[in-house]
Amino acid sequence: MKFFKLFLYFLFILFYTTNLFAIGLDGLILNQNINNYLIISEEEKNEDNRIRKFDKNIKIYVNNTFNLGYENRGTYKDFEIPNPDYFWDVYYIYEKDKKSNYIVALKSINREVPQSEFKIGECSSLRQQYVKEAIGANYSKKKKEYQNWISGDRIRFKDRIVHTSIENGISYNHLFSCVHSIYYSGDEHYVSTYFAYGINTDYQIVTDMDNYLNVKNLDEFNESLITNFKIWGNYEISEQNYLNTNSYSLKEYRNTAIQLHQEKNN
Image (tube, rainbow, N blue to C red; front, side, top):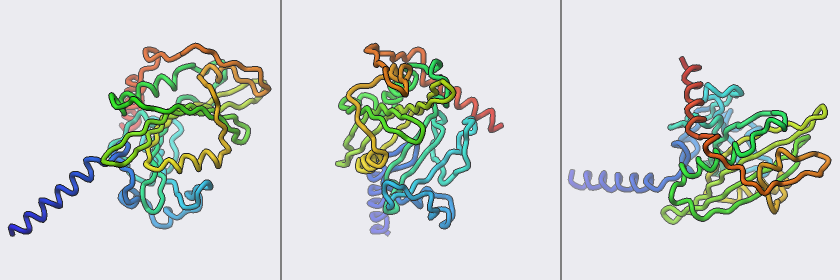
């Protein structure tokens, strides 16, 4: 009995220390057996549309039904979210070698609004507040990346901040991205924007995605470009910093999302 209790004690210590340093997003933990999360059949797990074109060894799983207040809710519920943040609209898990390789949450800020109605600073301000909330005082060293690419009839711009932390000897990449898509129709430019937070321990997956999309790096960017951009050129980037955390409160956005979810849930 003594040895059995000792065995249980060491088992508890092993479990506790493993989970103490486990990093993830809202209860979804990185580098775990994907079957710990998936609630779909083997047939659904192996659907061809899950395989990513940039790497045939990677599959994607989605939950876009959890937030009942999201008006563009989809039909995928591949996994449960232990501690959902209703600020987000969608969660993704990228799987490689049966492990949760990359976890991403996405918030739609606007969808196909006229360029004249685009709110400068909305996404970047919400991101700034979320970064402080997620990283806190540890948020010191960061890398900024500005990119653009063409996807179909849309021109996309990505403003990405990358923060790398080290926990228990493992490097974790935190990616905070504002992504803007512009398209032209009927003599008008339209803008769609989303904010995404992703976390992984292998940045190669991000590099492979960027290479597949033929992403180009930009030397400079701020959201004034989105209001000025024209498909025929002749646009400018203002030097003014438009961040305004008072106008775009993360707390208010989250509270509104929670309220909408609860109303739909009643």
